[in-house]
Image 1 (spheres, protein in one colour):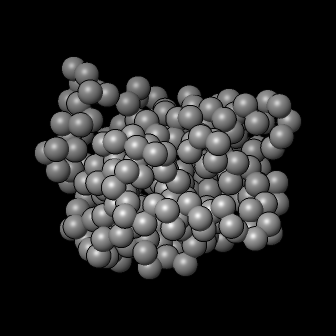
Image 2 (cartoon, protein in one colour):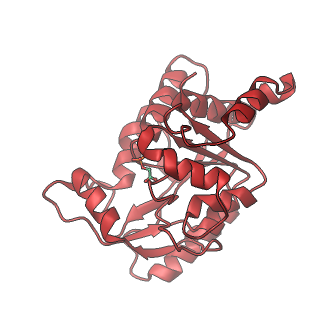
Image 3 (cartoon, helix red, strand yellow):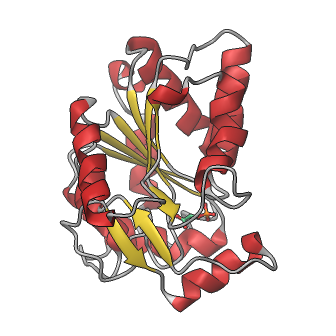
Length: 250
Ligand code: PGA
């Protein structure tokens, strides 16, 4: 099964068991295939996603939900509208708040009020970031404003085209992410191989924010062959996956 489809399968399995599951969602290139597969699964009647509650990882400060580059717009296009998710079940970091710290605190409170995140979907940056938690972000950080590194602004320029890339984002913190009951990180392609190896087999370090997941009690890392290329214990991971007891596979 492809990496993105496996992530969709894990999400669908949770939602079948718990239709009102609270999902933490990610944007970027990697989750596109996962969302497309979830939409297909709903169309085929294999899962009903209309009762889920969602909290997105991050958003650009100053962009409203209709801006073509906002993550809210991305989510509406690729998941929320196709599955018919009611607006009241959707939560996006408060990109337009006038009092940013208060709004970030309120975002944390609404996650808690929803009962916490059951499953957090994650991508990973080449530098090991999760959400917009750039290297050296506190491993205990909570939802807050971040000023983007120049390299991240440059990477985003491809998406923004001629429009200026906002320098500020609101992102869940690494501590927020680590509170999710299950974290599912998907990485594909050669350009992610270093970040994956440092995340899984390197020391836990704020220089590689995703490495904080080593302290998380239930994290699943889904990779394709290219993103796995620099892992030293590949044979071990394959044999563990192949030899899991049946009850763990389903
Ligand atoms: P990508 O982004 O899926 O577009 O590679 C991942 C990330 O930066 O978190």
